[in-house]
Amino acid sequence: MRSALALLAAVSPVLAGVQEVWWNITYVQNANPDGLAERRVIGINGTWPPPAIDVQSTDSLLVHAYNSLDQPMTLHHHGMFFNSTSWMDGALAISQCGVPPGQSFDYAVPIDTSGQWGTYWVHSHAGGQYVDGLRAPVVIHPPVEKYSYDEEFTVVLGDWYHDEHSVLLSQFINVANPGGAEPVPDSSLIYFAQNASYLGPIAGTHPHPTTAAVGFNENATLPFQPGKTYRLRIVNTSAFAMFYFWIDGHDMRIIEVDGTDVEQSSVDLVTVTVAQRYSILVTARNDTSSNWAIHANMDTDMFDTVPPALNPNLTSSITYDSSASLTDLGFIDLYHDVDDIALVPLDVEPMLPSTRTIELEVTFDTMDDGTNRAMFNQKTFNSPLVPTVFSELTLGSNASVVEAYGPYSFVLNHLEVMDIVLQNGDAGKHPFHLHGHKFQLVQRSTDYTSDDPALNPPIVEGQANPMRRDTVQVPSGEGVTLRVVADNPGAWIFHCHIEWHLEVGLAVTFIEAPLVAQQRGSIPQVLDDQCKTLGMPTSGNAVGSLNALDLKGLPEGPFPQF
Image 1 (spheres, rainbow, N blue to C red):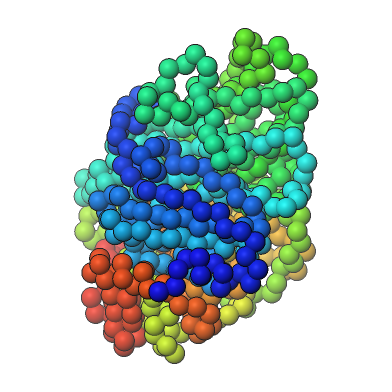
Image 2: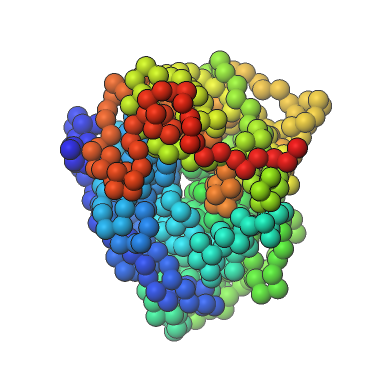
């Protein structure tokens, strides 16, 4: 069996350094970060929230994860490429079977060879565990930042439920909910980190003892000094909610999006949907006569109903002088989205010609079993019995047969350039994330069904430097074209990052350069052993058959009612 350290050494001829963390994934009782209700959460080493991670881009990250839960778990380092080692990606049923209770797995994140830095996060990709709290920010520092600033903080946003994910999911996927109304959060959270530590509560406040070491919401504040410039790294760790973020009395300039440094862009409002990240520069005021409100308001248009008890508008603060009063300017006149396609990356990557187009239309419907499901092209995703990367690496020449992976899959040639044309036929907004890659935003339409080029313009080929990111929002009725270079052999999931929508099948998988993947590496034996512990096959097609086309026993449906 190859150790995780050996794997890191294999992908890095000169090992600059390995930052190791030891995470015992545990339940934590009686957490109450919003001050409204105690609940059990999933934390690390008996505490919540899980530790923030800071690492240098010249280092690799090694997360020793031990599962003290009563169910299989995984960790997904969101936005990381895992070049040619997609079994480290942490996507349940795609990358691995899951770490069984009482066992461990070492997640090797080869940052030093990925050419990545910026703002990311880590979360479970199994059983909705990140809804229950298994999520934390990750900051990767390059040797030299593109912009200069005096200090930085990470701003963690997230929605918050008082019931556990399993309870909410059973209510959501239910014949009593044929319209598919998603669970609405009970509240939301904002808290801050710096140098891998969370900022404590405002002096004189009395937070709940289980989470008393961290300041949340009105008990959290950012300390500013006059004239200094601060980088704020905003991360949305929600299961469902998008946030509108702004700071009273201060200007904001976007400088990074999902790990891509961009030309400065002044904004009055930052829209951060689920799983997205933005860095902004904020220059402090020159007086200390007042402290100022930080706002993070949930987009309630995404909710079927707004419960009377829900306060969707978070308020925290910037503190110049603890004895000064707080200035809160209240609501803004009109919400609007960040025009992300207009942002310009600092590192230039020209648009390559596409040789393939994959159209994916989003719809939801009440299915033949009475439940509401999500679909791409009228098909709802079901997990394979064999993790997809295991199939890719064990099928030999048959690994290029797309049917082997089930009806929700696409096989890509090595270095193929493709367009994913996303069309949102649903009534709500959706954030979509592609594992293992950044995509270029090369076209947006405000009505994907229209023949009017003003509403649905053609792609402009030959763009010098399109915007790149890993998570994109598509509003209702709109479309976006994502240009992707298939330069990362492995198996990667593409899905809506609203957790409830992933649970009801809004996903497909891309199996990339399978014959090249077979030449580049092998799955650690411990992952094979853990699949067997969980009673799952580890070779063959999606159901474990060596006959690529024999899919007897593959989970399918439910199906639309025709």
